Image 1 (cartoon, rainbow, N blue to C red):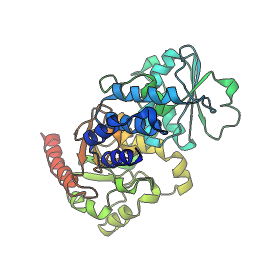
Image 2 (image 1 turned 45 degrees about the vertical axis):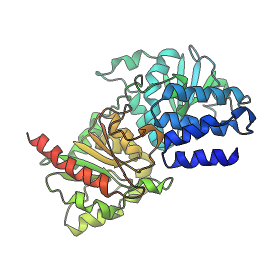
Image 3 (image 1 turned 60 degrees about the vertical axis):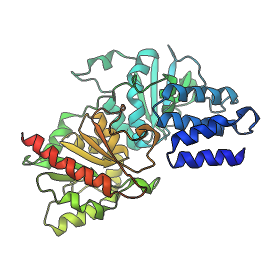
Image 4 (image 1 turned 180 degrees about the horizontal axis):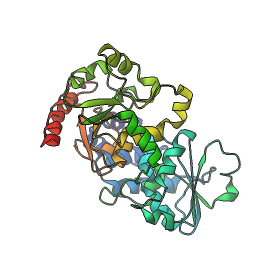
Length: 366
């Protein structure tokens, strides 16, 4: 049995989903001490295939076998009319992606509290700010945004049900056809004016770049040297949307060519200040781009939420949310996916991006 599970997991890791699912399906879960491991693998297969409804049946099986959650996370109980604590315990990009259900939660619950890491709070507040384009936000249940470090605000006495944000697709039994639109991001006009002043007069189409992510998965990142053939395109103006600590190659590249730094990090700000205010600033800065080219990181979710044309460079064993072989995504209609054909080889997707960029420029000039 253990050998068969490992065989299925090897197929799954290689994204041979049909083979993995055939092995998982052949196993007798009732006689296996870790049936959750099998259903978890089957869940991943179905999510990669875009078969969300079947994946939720795997989630149901896992939940039925589980003991009561000591942390009192959602166990299938109703949320209507309840005070809901929504905890964002996953990555930055996950938080942006899953908070598309925030408007629905505010319609169904009496109050919604969102708890996230301090760096994300300005961006989350930009998701719940009423605007003339989105006046309904002001008529929903109130929402409070709080930090992980807040003392007392998130104690049990303040909520009836708590949900981790990654559970929201399961809670709403989402399918690829029923995913809500990303939440509208709105920025203060003063911030946008500051950014436009920093950018200066537009003379060419502006392209935002992100090539390096966190150390969580280095295989997602593209070595900067491999981007150089892309940067030879002089018909567009490239800007770095990289985090401060990952911007050294770009700074050196610009200095060698006598260019301005072309990054949203302006002079005079310290790394500490940027680290705590940078995410919302980056989102507002990205909103002024004509196109964003990024690896699988938070920038893809922000650009997709902004409705920007976004080209996403994906490693071959891409995350389940991008499914298999597709060039588009039901999560973000403006995304275009460029995938590795061979593990670790960025040549093919970058060739596709270079070709597409020439077409993009011609279309903008038409």
